[in-house]
Length: 399
Image (cartoon, rainbow, N blue to C red; front, side, top):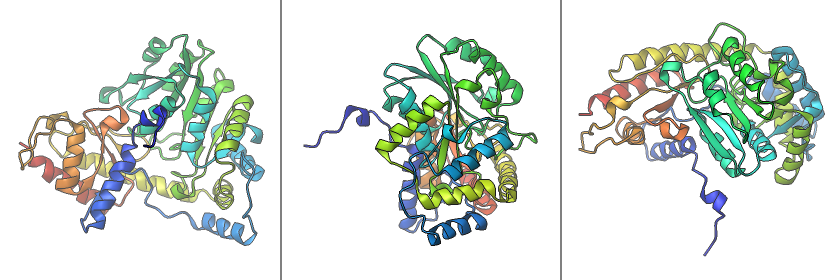
């Protein structure tokens, strides 16, 4: 009999990937499934980025890459952080990994000791809590709700910090809520963190270019009070439609960057040489493609908010970034399907929508948000319109 380690047995399966797999299986059987479960832009990678990858192949970038990434890419990231975010990170403070998820997990594994507390405002992305578990840390959730646009308050943060607090993990724009913290809201949080010097600040900024506030994105690392203990997590997946290229990075204090590089040297070594050269072109090349995609996402945001508000019982806010909607669905809990099955929770509702409407969503429980479901609007206007028509019809059948 094979023995699986307790740390792996304790991990939850990624519900976003699980629902995406279920919808793919139904599609393979011939079902016309509309997949709103996966957070992936439906655009193709821009031409100049693909050309850079082709050139890298022709130029024989086919050997092992340096563990922390090519210096030319790390320099491009350093320049980008300075130019766009007013952050000062030397190339030596940047470690390139196999996607932002890998970079984040590296940071958590390198900085969180058994029993350390990590503060995570919820709803939160499915993997945050599991990464902390893997490091044998303790997750401290701070619940937020629709009434606050799913944003953490300074008072909530102050009340959650203890002598065992090692880090706070904040995502803005947020997956799964689409919330974006304003400069004033971040300043209030920074004022609290400034009083607790032991707390490492981990800022997941992977959606920074997908915002609809009309203003510039504000990085947590740009606040002088906490700049020397802030780690930035980012990558090319969302802004440049490069999810499959698997390039992300952390920008961190030197000691943490060295620890991450040491860890990565034993786990995976350097990221794909070809993908790194493509990412370099993304950061140094024309940026008009980023704005074109952002405009499309904003149009889709407007569409799904309008369609969702037309469905009796769904409660939604207006997300200010990313490409997710998190409707509150408690009005449907306790109702029964046409087949007589009772909807006991938001997971039952997500499964009902997949089976009855052939629309894949994700149970809010995966994001520590019971009573909600998450929908990604990173698909065409036509798909979204049809998906909400089906959702409306299916919900209308519940009694």
